[in-house]
Length: 438
Image (cartoon, rainbow, N blue to C red; front, side, top):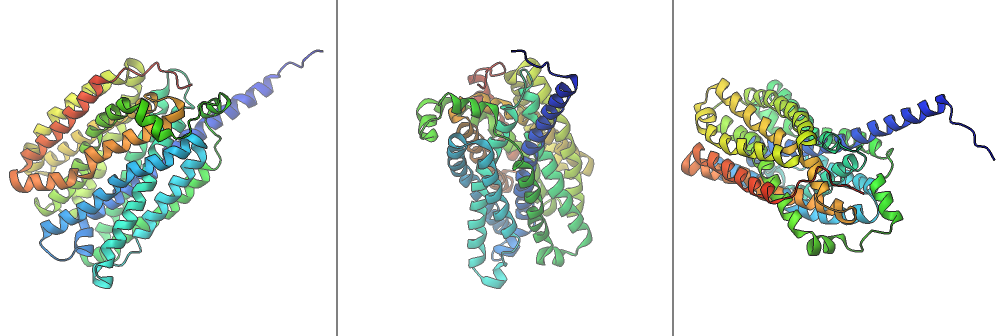
């Protein structure tokens, strides 16, 4: 019996369908992390500017800022819990459905924060509701990044995992620009009283539109080839968390340590610097937000460069160079940020966020490569979010305390120490560039 040859037209259609599928996967992984960082930085900006006075009006300005930064850290405590929950289902039932669920939890919590009345309206119930929703936001966020990174890397062709894994890592730049740009527009057009009364709520409510877009895209993608292969080989484990902690605790720890520098650079250069710049240096709020928008463009530029280099030379060499540069950058905080000069402050922000992009980009491929398919969603998510507890949950709080007691040079030393921690983690891990994900 003869078989009909495949016509050139059919081959072209198959290639076009494959390219369309790859583009859809890339966009689906990118849009989720963009929304994730939009949601997270919307809260971070609000914490630096208005959460203290609105929800914790009693006490000094410093006490209000510290209380706001405590609520900021709550989500980072919740994120590993979210990564355990969503990681379990992501490794058991699939990447696609789990990503849809995590996006819903994250988006709903963020949107509802925009409707919580302030302390003046409902008293102590206001900060309680805020903390509950912040915790829910962290649960959803805990399942987001790991799934998005797996979506990109498990679809990636040979030799291009760093490049494909870069697209979730571009999400922070875009999410940051969207949230900061919106806050910048509101701060520029509203009075301080209007901004405090209702203006700060607008970015939270806008999140609902972005989540709707993300859900539309994610519902149209198929399950990843690596997970399909795992199902066919019956490789799924009953309790992924137990398998992770018993057999893969060392790469989980190293991955978490490697992530510390990314978080510390980002949140000290944005949340702490914004709070310090507006309150201590008396730089106008719109001016500082505008400088952050400029600086984050350099984070976006560093991301594809670093991802390409990680495919070319390996994940470890790129991260080692990035960590060493981050150690040195801590010494620039006092002379640059502390100067109060707008060009020097902008230079500091550019340096820190460029280095954040350079160290963050390889993680999209590195963390999934550390784990087998059966625990990859759980492992990548837990490592990523444990790094968040170590590097970000208390970073603005610690920076605020250090600045009050020892000045910006102490905060710079904190950044350098965090980079040393990540350098240790990277030096101890294996090179993963040629690891097979199937």
